[in-house]
Amino acid sequence: MEKGIKIVTIGGGSSYTPELVEGFIKRYNELPVRELWLVDIESGKEKLDIVGKLAKRMVKKAGVPMEIHLTLDRREALKDADFVTTQLRVGLLDARIQDERIPLSHGVIGQETNGAGGMFKALRTIPVILDIDKDMSELCPNAWLINFTNPAGMVTEALLRYGKNKKVIGLCNVPIGMEKAVADMLEVDHNRITMDFMGLNHMVFGREIYLDGEKITDKVVDSLAEGKLGSIVKNIQDLEWNPEFIKALRMMPCPYHRYYFQTADMLEEELKEFSKGETRAEVVKRLENDLFELYKDENLDIKPPQLEKRGGAYYSDAACRLINSIYNNKGDIQPVNTKNNGAIEGIENDSAVEISCIITKDGPKPIAMGKLPVSVNGLVQTIKSFERLVVEAAVEGDYHKALLALTINPLIPSEKMAKILLDELLEAHKDYLPQFA
Ligand code: G6P
Image (tube, rainbow, N blue to C red; front, side, top):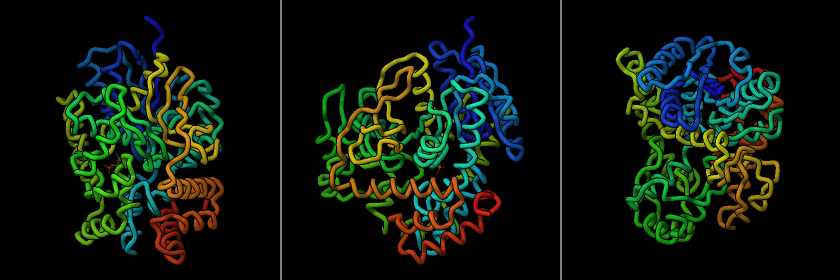
C-alpha cells in the first residue's frame, strides 16, 4: 500500500467537518488520504469528540482505509503533514454574535466578514493563523496550507505578507456557488459552466461566463437581469438586483456585493431581524446546536443534508477538488485566493486576489485578467486598502491603523462612528485581542 497522504484539519471540531470527510471519501481512489488529523482547542474538546466519532462512522461505512486521529496537540498533528486545512473561529459563534450585534445597535451593517464585523474577525484570527504557519515551517515545511478560515481574503493577505510558508492558498465556496447557480438556471451539469473570476474574496466578479468553453456572458447577464438566478448562498438575503444595473455592470456580481451596491436595503433587512432579537450569527448558533444533536446519533454515518442550510455549504467540495488537483497535478482551472503577481493589473503584485487559476502540483497559477472595469476598480481598490490596513493592525496591535481601516470602509458611515465601533468592539473582544492590550 502506498504511503498515502496525511491531512491535518485545524478547527476539526467544526460542524462543517463531515462535509470535508465526505469529500475525501468520495475521492479516495485518486486522493488516498491515509491519515486525517482533526485538531481543536480545549474549549472545543466536546465538539471534536462528537464530530470525530461521526467521521469514524462515515469512514467505516464507506470502507476506505483512512485513519481518523483526534487531538488537542496541534504540533503533534502537524508533523510530516502533506496538507493542512484551517477552518477555525476564534471566540466561536458568541464572538460572531458581537461582531454582528454591536454595529447593528448603532444602525450600521453587522456582518461576519464585511465591515466592522469582518475587521474584528480578522483581528482575532490573523495572529492565530500566523502561529499555525510558524509551527508548519518547523514541523511540515513542505505542506500546503489551505485556508478557508474567514475572512479568507484578509487571512490569505496576512499569510502572504507575514507568513513563513509560501505554499499558501485561500479558499471560499462563493465562486463554486456562483457557477452552480448559473448551471442550475440553465439546467445543465455544474461542470459545464466555468467563469473568469476576478476580484477579492467576498468581492469577486464573474467577468466572463462559459458553457462548454463557449462565452455566454451576455445571455447570463440578461437572465440575471430578469431575476432568473436562484440563491447562491444561504446566509445572504436574495434581494432583487435592478435589471438595468446588472446590464450596465455586464458581469456577475457575488452575493456579498449586495452589501455594497444595496447597502441601505440590506441594512433595513438586517435591522428588521435585529429588532426581533435575531442576527445571522444567532440563527447559525441554533443551526449548530441542532447539527451537533444530529451528529451525536450513533446511527448517523453519513453527512446529514441539514448541513446544507449553512452558508458555507459545498466549501469542502472546493477544498477537496483543490487538494486533489495539486496532488494529481491536474492542470484544471479553479478560483482561489493567491498572490496577484500581475494577474489583475492595478493591484499590487504581492497582494492576495481571488482569481481563476490553473492548479498544478506547484500550486495555483493565476490567469492574467487585465484591468478591472473602471466601474468596480475603485471599490475593489478601497477594499484591498481596507484589508491591508486590517492585516497590519492585526499583526502590530496598532489602534490607529485599525481606526483608519474602519474609517475608509464603505460600510462605515463616518469617522466618528468608526471610533465608536472600534472602541466598543475592542472592549467586547479584549480576551481574544492580546496584541491590543
Ligand atoms: C458564505 C461564505 C462563507 C461564510 C458563510 C457564512 O457561504 O462563503 O465564507 O462563512 O457563507 O454562512 P453562515 O451559515 O455561517 O451564516
